[in-house]
Amino acid sequence: MNYLKSIKQSFLLAALFCPFFLQAQSNYSTRNGKISFFSSTPLEDIKAASNNGTAVLLSKTKDIAFQVPIKSFQFEKGLMQEHFNENYMESDKYPVAKFKGKLNQDIDLSKNGEYDVTSTGTLSLHGVDKPRTISGKLKVSDGKVQLISNFNVACVDHNIKIPTIVIAKVAEIIAVKVDAVLTPLTK
Amino acid sequence: MISTKIKSLFIALGISSSALAQDADSLLNQLGGNQKHDALTATFKASRIIFTQSTETEKKYDLNFLISHRFGDIGGDFGSSHTLWGLDIAQDLYIGFDYGITSKLTAGIGRSKHNELYNFFLKQKMLEQTKTFPVNATLFAQAGIIAREENSVNEFANGSDRNSYFLQALVSRKFSSAFSLQGSVGYLARPVGSEANDEKGLLSLGLAGRLKVTKRMALVGDYQFSNISRPDNLINTYYNSLGAGLEIETGGHVFALNFCNAPYINENNYIAETLKSWTDGGVRFGFTISRNFTLHKSKNPDINSKIY
Image 1 (cartoon, rainbow over the protein chains, first blue to last red):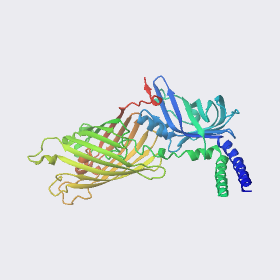
Image 2 (image 1 turned 135 degrees about the vertical axis):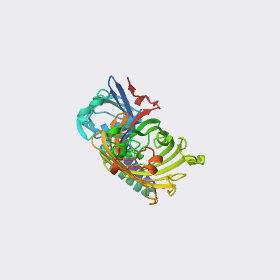
Image 3 (image 1 turned 90 degrees about the vertical axis):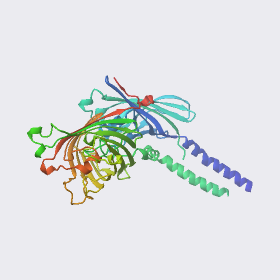
Image 4 (image 1 turned 90 degrees about the horizontal axis):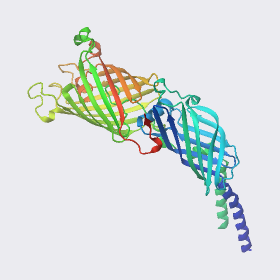
């Protein structure tokens, strides 16, 4: 009897575990995604980068979200960084930049491969929300998902004002690059 | 035994499925413990407000080059059109370099025209204002050496009579992106007083503020209450220092234009020796130009900026 009972219990255990393992593989996240941007004009090329991007990807609902603290962007010059935070991004008031959207493609994240994807959602920056469709790439290998995306942000879209005195030094359209390796979220 | 295991499994599953039920937003927030990016920056734009240090220190490896100038009295015996309201006179001139050893520790050297004073200082940021912590706090320690010749025989009987020391604790708060306020407590230690009855050590309390009027312009006010600990029976009348000014920021430069009664720029000079008052024309125009240099180039290609 005991023997039979334990078999029953092991089945029960297995049955319980199965969906758990399947589901556990369907959420991906990172908290050290790399995000960088580039402003290019004939006078100055300005670059900045952050390794503090957080990203989540929920394969079940196809939700994708990426967020970065504005103050985590590092510049070559400390003063540039201060101006970026104080005069352009007002990061005390608007501390994070965020994209939240849904993947437009059905991707099987259990299969290794490279997939071109687009995501439609909202880009929130400097207190202004803009509906955007952003294209990128998902590279799946061994359970990890690498998210790569290049897109542009027009300063005027997000009410970021460039004073006329530096207009030749700061580009009106900023190129943004995201590169993040998401790992399965286990809890 | 087994049933307890199953029970704990159910609990574990309960937790994990609740995690799965969350949407992208709450997951992001869970991950995002971004406490370290919480510090409020730029409570003040410059390292000095008018004559008082601000709680700001230089950025790591940044060198700040300062030139300060104080003209002569606008009114009174030394002012009026005969000196073009003080513009003919260079009451004091300060040339200095501040260097950020770390982003919180600044070392500085400078030289003043008055007393031919050479000063050396260290400035350490102790606390930073964040979303949860209310104030910035900075300690400032300065030594000054008078290099001029004696005005009277045995003025500096001992070599150490040329040295003075100033210690100051500064506390500031950025109330909004436009308004910051600073309080300070300072102590000036001198080998000899200004006159026979004078105290050697002087306590000085300060209050200063900054109000941004545009993104790149701010009004600043500065007050040093320096005569609290002084006796009443002194021959000269010593005044507290009051200044008001305009700060203009243009990228790497900060220009500060001001009016104040303090004739001298360095703490070791003006705390004890402000004999000018706003009420008798002893106000002067002054300015400070500071230029920032980044000495250390980052090796990270992601953040290399190029200026053509």
